[in-house]
Image 1 (spheres, helix red, strand yellow):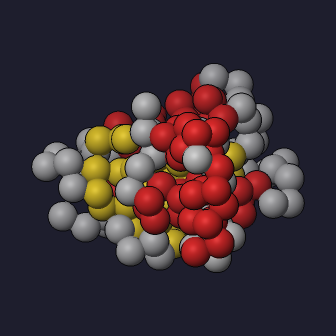
Image 2 (cartoon, rainbow, N blue to C red; image 1 turned 90 degrees about the vertical axis):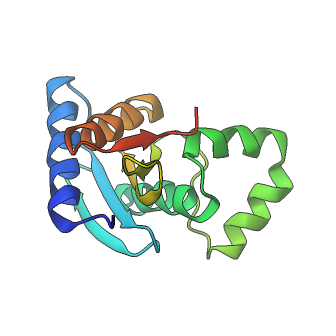
Amino acid sequence: MPLTLAAAQTILSAALAEGRAKGMNALAICILDERGAIKLSASEDGTSLKRGDIARGKAMGAISLGVGSRAIARMASERPHFISAATHAIGGALIPVAGGVLIRDGAKAIIGSIGVSGDTSDNDEIAAMAGIAAAGLVGDPGA
């Protein structure tokens, strides 16, 4: 099942709602489909200039490597040369910190990814996971 625009809109709305409910800083969110194409992107009022790019980098890293960005952060610590090379291979768009989450369907197939930026990386991930759950899909942060 592909990631639909309706599902992406649900994910975005629910992730933003989670951020507001938990008093997080203003968030930027980027949702990619299974090919890595932007499905939906938004930044709340008050985000800094490059938060959207950081959100995209978290999502792009996850979809490109097939693991959530929490796992990519561990790889960056354990194998920095690999992450440096991978970042170069995908055009510089890889942010190796939590907040990039794979979106899986009920059969566990990867159908997209989400990147959230604006608060702590842990809180970004919490918002992403809440959005994915609200759409009835499975989040994989790479834990």
